[in-house]
Image (cartoon, rainbow, N blue to C red; front, side):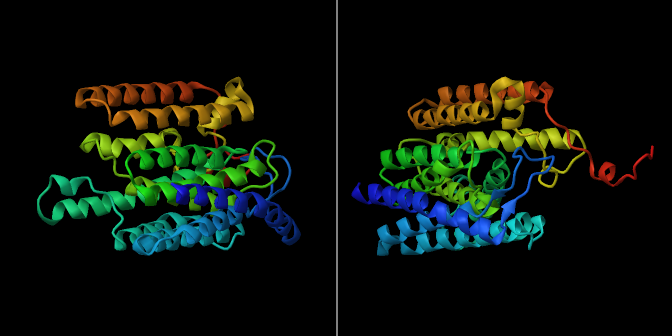
Length: 355
């Protein structure tokens, strides 16, 4: 138990104290995110806040690492470091965005798989190597999907860091209830690093984490989801717990994927003000209110995740049905709410005055 608290406190203090000098450095070298029509901020904001999150997490994990968990921790650190570096290169314009999605995210997932960290869904009931192969495919999809979801979630002050902190808090509690000390320690370190940075990033933000921080946090969330193993649940409840804990980024990614495909856009290459938070803000919540609402939604999903392993199979199926119907209704409602519709690529390239 003391290890968990040590990891949390170290990550919190390191992230909190390092963000200020990182901010000064970003301003000194001109590493800023400039305003444009698809963004909500109106003045240049320093990037590189992800470096403080990264340093806080790594320091906490290194201090609390034990020899018997070294291999898995090093795998998590290797994949997370790869994505943090990739994100920073993208932030400074040295990397094409498709490299992240199609190269480094799958490669980071392969690092986890090679260390033995992977989904265990199909192998439990499919014979031979088929179940293992399907679990590997599911792991790739999960890691890439969750990492990308957090990457595109970083579009409003305090949103990505706050949602990551909420999810990490529930991963910490869920792992503690199941006696998974390693998962609990990693989650506590993630929570501390995210909260320390959130002090500087909540509205009005003084610094952005950039894609390096968002991808780093997304990868950690995906890895925690793979490592969490509810002890008292069964097949459906086992995989439902991490899905619920990460319900907000999963819903947001689902919403914009459906919305952009309906409008003839590519989901991950058409940035714009059409995310859940943007639509809530336009409905009257305002930016801060929209972020706080999504914090609350994340807490609701987290509570359901903690309760799901205590439900009977019939109750879990009923819960899944309610959540699915609620999700569909929410998507339909938000699709009808006011939001800024970005033009298609060919419309952007069309000469002025043309039909």
